[in-house]
Length: 187
Image 1 (cartoon, rainbow, N blue to C red):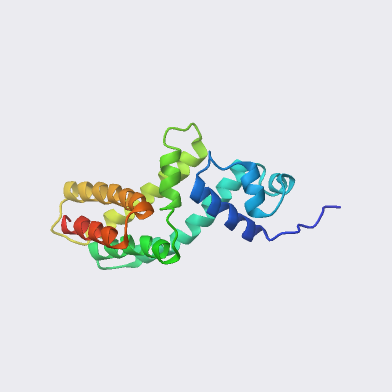
Image 2: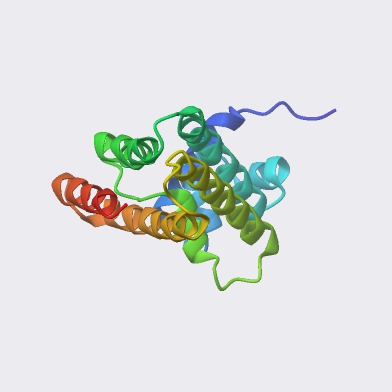
């Protein structure tokens, strides 16, 4: 007979996500996860297979939250203004809560860029490609832009979003807002 879990899986994944988000995958040890999650290694292995499986669940949780903001961006009809709103929304919750960890997806994208982990690299690439496609669709609303301009601006905005994620870890709200305004002055 299987033992009943003595913990709420959603709650422990949330705790693991916050730890991975703050420390990164490589730096986070199983001991740190046990302590943060309040469960033992056996329970982690039983529920998630291993640290990698738990990390994938953490990414899934984070992306489900980001998808709320992405869906709002997709549904917008104001073009560049929608993208600008997305930039502001992506930093507002972090700054409001005092979270200075940047974007978990961007942090993971950077950490795994030279890693052999194809599962995580594919997830990150799919996420970034999806974001780029949404940005392209928003830029196309301005019919005066040709395809080459749209692609250049989409690349610029995607890179600026990476920069914004890094800046939100160390810069003040005013510096970040100035950065966003300068980004969109160039579009």
